[in-house]
Length: 341
Ligand code: NDP
Image 1 (cartoon, helix red, strand yellow):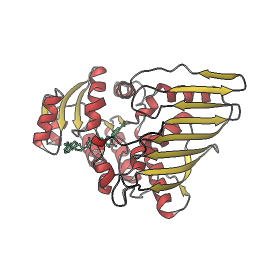
Image 2 (cartoon, helix red, strand yellow; image 1 turned 90 degrees about the vertical axis):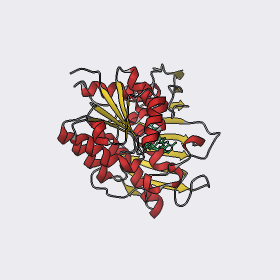
Image 3 (cartoon, helix red, strand yellow; image 1 turned 180 degrees about the horizontal axis):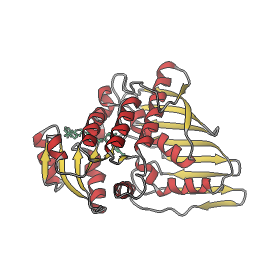
């Protein structure tokens, strides 16, 4: 099979414009069509991004592509992925995969039944910083991991201050936006699965209504590792980071919870400190390259559909914990909790 994929974009989105169109083109992919709910926006977006076929018709788009990149608002992912899979198209879908774990499970099942590849665009697994931490842990360089700390409190850029802050129906809130990434990165770096979570959320005034714009929580993993996370849309001056502390050493990642290929990882042990060598490949290009290879029969996407279910299951459980003030089991199989409520 050729690795030159013809891609359709579902959603005239910011993330596609800022990162993914270039990433697709950098891997030799052709962006042939973009679908918007509005014909004028589709046309303007297509012209600005040199995409030949703007459309509002999903079936028309599906008729001319091999793969779709889904970056509409979150409540639309489920139906669009099911329709794409049934049309035999490979799917790279944004996180969160859906608004419930049950819907995300449908999406994975539909893609499996159709024999198409499903990837979740958890870009942070593709960061050289996180890959270096995963390798260092697997090589035993910090002994047995005991704790992890994720610092992912940022300021939501003004051009993104829309549905994320106002629209529960679209899957608004910092937990669905950012905690899902923390959960996926923790699973990836620790090579472990989470079992339960406790969380508190905050609405500090940037978001509206019941939508949370900050969250703090703790996750217990199967191995016993405890991980804390701090996520926000409201903090303009905090740095991001990702740390893992083990019996024989600590990994201190700084400025690494970001879209750009930046950040450093310090390994501190009894022998002293060293900065780990970091691959500076573009995160989104690596995501598309891994997806493209998977379509060609070579390996899996960097984050699979199952990985997307897991990260959503953590987010759903964190929101339930915040609502109920209880520790909530993380259940990637049975959970039907509607996370946007
Ligand atoms: P946007 O708000 O930019 O786009 C989402 C939808 O909003 C678009 O599909 C579009 O609808 C509509 N829209 C966009 N711009 C306008 C406008 N100017 N006027 C009217 N409607 C507009 O969302 P993002 O790109 O930030 O996020 C999209 C998805 O990607 C989400 O699922 C999000 O979670 C995910 N994401 C993932 C990231 C990652 O690094 N993995 C980073 C950022 C987002 P239509 O298509 O109908 O025109």
